[in-house]
Length: 609
Image (tube, rainbow, N blue to C red; front, side, top):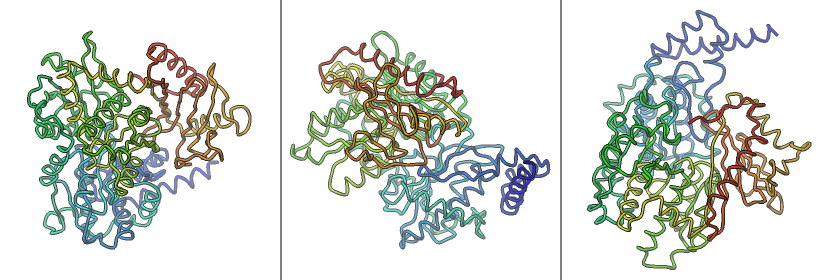
């Protein structure tokens, strides 16, 4: 056993020694030199055990030294691979070029920052004669896909870890169609990274780019054009000018403040009150445990206080890279209601369709209208589509699928009005084929201002949507699990529940009526038992349909150590016993946790507010 361990240790030592030949960042160089001097095998394995995996979400990992972390050298290696892959795919790469944006993240102990990583990536492309549109300042993530489309570029890179903890960073990649990459590009890029690990001659000399004619700054142009484009979704300018409704906005120490202020101006709305402690970018996210508005009320404490002080009824919260949006509204009771992603998806879907209908001169055009949502999101759009006569499609989880599908439909002359996922992501404007928290914030503000003229709150309108199209009650949460073996075992158990290759027939008192497993491609509801949506063996995802009309999906996260679940109970229009529906769903979720997750046995950590 010891011999095998020492062979492994030698591999990590060699990787660390190789690293020192290539790394020119003094901080990460010193960390690795120290590790080698101490000879701690466990620590060496932590830094050199395995390279960060490049997936369809690009890279996401903690900043630090070694091949398993985000740092100057791994960014250079990743970009060299990406550059070679693009050269292979685009004969006109040197004519069209790429766009690179970054958020405000930084990590003092390893000397890494989003801006530094973006400059090194730009330098890599420019050294190969590829034009680079590098934003000169922090931007929201949606500006990168917008620029790819607007300037017809070959690709885009956004350096961000979105709403992850402060030590993390990420490298998100967009293809020429303006959507995030999907397979097989991730595998092709991954292979090219493996083949291009030694830094090219000028890889570290990023000062060279400042005088290069290949470097362009799209900041001013995009700030003008983007806000011009989202104004196509502004339908009630006169109401916006006159509304007495007050809004609070928080960017949770991220990039959103300036851009949401500009969006309000573009819609002729008075600027929202900004939470002063959170409006400026701060990579330490000092006022929140997690910089993720999805986590609920904890992130919004300062927003509630400011809203109470200034008499604002609605809070708009972006995550740090401003591609997601959470919304809260003060109720008659004085309590604050934080809308779930599904509830806001229902409101925005209703609003955007209503605006389209009121402004469309040709009612026959409805046959070319589409809305999309991911398979773990509420099916409320399906209910609206069925009643109103437009098309609804569901995709796999993640905006990469919705963005790519939206582009396909648009290329066929269809109008994709809206797409959303329950993880508070909304695509309200066809100029950005990804989730966009800036346009979603201002469109929500216009919707609220319009409803106020009818003496309706967002909550009242949500109830009206459910009254008309049927109640859709949803509940989602997650367990944290850092052991991939336990996760694998949990899903294997579900696939071999009552003997080999048998799925559960019931969950507590709830009878299972259908199963779709998008890891294996099995779907009990299809004649040939093959799933229609694409399958992926690299991630776990099983959906259970229950005899009571409930649906529950369990899946692993692509970017965090979580096993997530999503559940929904849909009732036809006219079934107004909401409390009974909620009680039934609560019982279903409790059974799901107890029988399928088995948190005590599997030592799973619950989501804590």
